[in-house]
Image 1 (cartoon, rainbow over the protein chains, first blue to last red):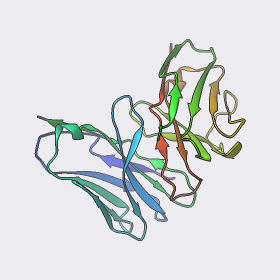
Image 2: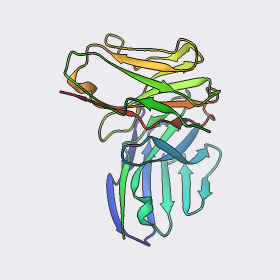
Image 3: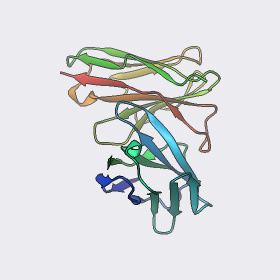
Length: 111
Length: 115
């Protein structure tokens, strides 16, 4: 069964902290993995996409890594800001085009 | 470019009633997706269209859910009759083409509450 687990489910940190969100998956044959951001009442916005042949991707204060052998991905957010408050979802595709989503991590950055 | 448009934003109905959602994808996008996102969970793909043809509807509860994309542009998703467990946000997404490398662009969703 294809499963994606995200830990922690919720996180509250003071502004300025560096933080790590975790995503683990059971499928060893992933094609790519993507991190999304979802603001309350909104759709999903893609943050970073990592192909299976890559180990990490960076965009601004965000860095995502992928370790296929251990079935893990992490999203690192540097110098967090209140505007980073949102739910962060990871999702992967494998043999099909379908995204398999995790349940998300709800992040709150306190000013 | 205009994003994926969905309407209505919110809908409240009683169980056993019917409801329909509408999605207008980004202009030129051939592939359209409908997802169901239950509170506290990640989105689950219900159906994928490539132009006006169905690519995958394996997770669509076909006894009560139906979807169409007659002219290969706009799409509607219908539920008839609704059950309590259908309470969720229904997200529409589109991509230029199908395929695992194609980024999907999401609308803001329709939040459905079943009483």
